[in-house]
Amino acid sequence: MPHLSSSRRRTVLKAAMATVVTGFAAPVFAADPLKIGLILPLTGPFASTGRQVEAACRLYMKQNGDSVAGRKVELIVKDDTGVAPETTKRLAQELIVQDKVSVLAGFGLTPLALAAAPVATQSRTPMIVMAAATSIVTSKSPYIVRSGFTLPQVTWPIAEWAAKNDIKSAVTLVTDYAPGLDAEKTFVSRFSGAGGKVLESLRVPLRNPDYAPFLQRAKDAKPDALFVFVPSGEGSAVMKQFSDRGLKEAGIRMIGTGDVVDDDLLESMGAVAVGVVTSFHYSAAHKSPQNQAYVDAFMKANRFRPNFHSVGGYDGMHLIYEAFGKVGAGADGDQVVAAMKGMAWTSPRGPMSIDPATRDPIQTVYVRKVEMVDGKPWSIEFEKFENVKDAGA
Ligand code: PHB
Image (cartoon, rainbow, N blue to C red):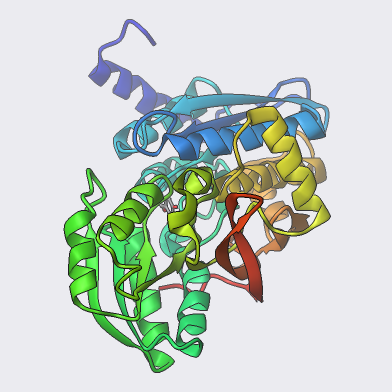
C-alpha cells in the first residue's frame, strides 16, 4: 500500500484483519504457494540472529525441496531490525493480510515474539518461534510452536553442574529483559537449592550495554564463578571485559548458558573463551552424523559457523514441512498446530520433540567447555541431561 498514510494504512490493515478473523478469507487451493512469512532482525545489533536463521531455513529448503503436499513453498523474509516490537507486529499483519502467508516464523527476541502473538491468534495462523526463548512466549498464543529452546530449560543444568563441581559462590550477570530474568531466577534458585551462595545479581541494559562497570563489580565481589546470560551477538563484548578486567587471573571462572559462547562469534573470541563452561542445547561441535552433515553443508553454503539460532530455524522448517505433509495442503492453522504437537525427530542438535502441553521443545541439554581444537575454539560437550522440558521460571 505505497500511497496510503500510515494511519490510513493501519485502518485498512485492521479492516482486512477483521475479514480474516471472521472467516471470509479465500479458500486455499492446492496450486497456491505455501507462503512462510519469516520475520527476523537482519540489521541492527541482533543481525547475526537473522543471518543465522535465514541461512538455515534456506539450507533446509535446498536439501528437502521447495514443495510440500503439492504446494510450492515460498519464503517471504522481512527485516524487523530487532529492536522495535511495533514494527514486528505491523510486518506480521501485512504478511497475513497482503501476502496471505500460511505460517509466521522467525522472531529473534522475546519482545518481538510477544508483539506478534495476538496477530497469530486473531488470524489463526501457526507462528513458529525459532529464536526467542523466554518461557512465557508459547503461553501468549495457542498458535505458537517453538523450535529453539527456553532459558529455564538450558539454565538449570549449569547451576547443578556448578554446585557439584567445587563452585561454592557465584555472581549472576544477565541482560535486563525477560530471558535474562528467566535465566537469573532459574540459576539463583537451582544453585542456592544445591547449596551454592549467590553473592550478587547484576542486570545490564539491553540497549547500548557497557559491560565494564558490571564486570568490575563482579570482580570486587570475589565469587568462585560469574554466571552470564546475554543474548546472541553480545558474547564478544562480555568476553573482552572479562579479559581486560582480569577476572580470569583473579581466579573467577565464567559459566553460563551457551549464548555467551555463541558459535557465530566463538571463533573470533579466540583464546579468552577457553575454559568457559556452559549448558546448552546446541554446539556446532556436537558429535553426530546428522550434525556433521549439517555443519559441513551450512559452512559450504555460508562460509560461517552455524550457531544455536540456526538449528532453531532449520528445525522450525522441519516442523512446517512435516506438519503440512501430514495434514495436507489445504489444512487450517488449528490442524497444522495439532500436527506439530508431539512431533519427534533427530535434529543436528540431537533428539527432540514438541511438548504437546506447552508447544516447547523437549531436548537434550549438554554441559560443554570451550577448548582449542586445531587452533580454533569450540564448545566441547562432556555431560548431558536428556529429555529436558521447559521448567518455567
Ligand atoms: C530472546 O530475546 O528471547 C533471546 C534472544 C537471544 C538469545 C536468547 C534469548 O540468545
